[in-house]
Length: 271
Image (cartoon, rainbow, N blue to C red; front, top):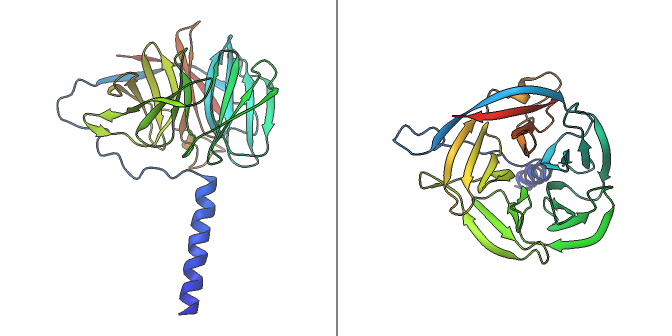
């Protein structure tokens, strides 16, 4: 009996240890390809060009444009970082290692770069120009996943079917929106990008981008991005799932990538 208990404890500890390193992928999404009539648009992804995704820390958690520069945050313990990338060439312009926690989503609002943490329950502020830490920390419940903003509020995901609007001064939740697809809740909402009243969202472990009405939470369109399968590219692995959406207002195109993906893709979404 003692041997069985010991074995169970070893299995449990191993599971928890792995769970701290990687998020659990959804096993299935029975509602992603419904055949019933729906007003949800099916958009096509068109690749315009691809850039190298440089650096040895590419477990992408946040992706955003600011002043013509592509900003990125990467995660995992001991491998987290902030980056500035030249969107024309993919060249790394600046990096900052984040050594004390698992970094998550980023967004830049009112001259502040907000960086979430995965399970530490803290959001830290940085100067987006030089990555200097501002020694301002907010706390929150649950996990931190994706982050974007609508020019007024921070918009955050935590891996559930909920999106939270937070005050950028206090970080208090001001509004909570449930995301649904034909009446079904969408879980594992990950990286976010707000554009003109819509939230473009990666669903963790699924090669589909959802276009969500930022007010109602209803999915209005879905984009099949399975053609960009980073896990099948050389020098990647099964963790190279789609994650990272950044809108470039100058070109009116999107830049997308994946965790550990060697490429960044400039794309358009067509009807």
